[in-house]
Length: 358
Ligand code: DAS
Image (cartoon, rainbow, N blue to C red; front, top):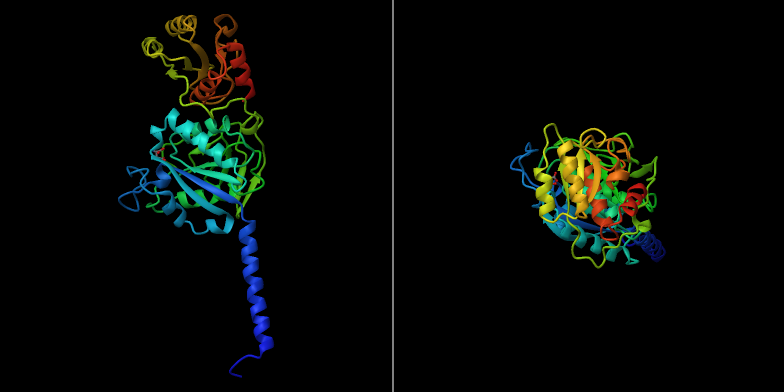
């Protein structure tokens, strides 16, 4: 038969219409995820396929990142914005304020269900925690990076980006705080840290544990963050154009007060001391910290050790010295909480409460 009967035409047209409507329906059901690109290795390129160190970070734009992973279209309706294009060792307070303000503006829109931020791995944990304390929404915000540039054999960026978008599009990620998706794992912003200079399994949450996995196109959560975050935060950066200057001094054998005194003289409003052990203070440094406190500088005792609680009144009499203990926050994260705390108060007792809350 050359031409099908009209009845068959109708059946064929009906089948096509149903197929198209199912695709359209599926597309309608996909969550709307915005990818904010900031640079880093995930946007990096190397000279050869075996260049996994010594490549150039922050060379590939957000549209190229999205085009390189067509599978994204199966898990979300994705849009991209190039917010910055930097290696993350150059991330600044100003970058953080701009990013937090953009995230909050987007999440207030009903047509945005989640956000993915592509980021260099060097300060990814810091940006994640800053946003954990400043995002005013329960919608998912997921940070993602790569330990190898996209030009390398077994580049980890594409699958990390796919997993991050899938997570940001999921209902499971709602209300869990800012998340980090790396190496098929889901980490909480507060506790994740970069533990290796170059291997793909670099991001870990030592002792306190990661939240779950992304496997077989699905997120699996086994834990939830215990501390306050995002929608429950008391910090508001919406009208800020700068943050108080807070610096970190490192403890080690034979340390003296020169670096500390220079930072205080340069106008630091807060100092985080990355002490040896349980936040111990070498005698000459303790004297300089006491003098700084008398000038109104807020002092937080943290530890270079990386795990465990820095106990209040443990290695130093914080009550007498009017210092703050960092709880389990590592020095770089204690700095972020102290900076935000100083936008609200200089009362050390209030700030200690904040370290017990977030
Ligand atoms: N320089 C590193 C950064 O941008 C590259 C990376 O690991 O992302 O953080």
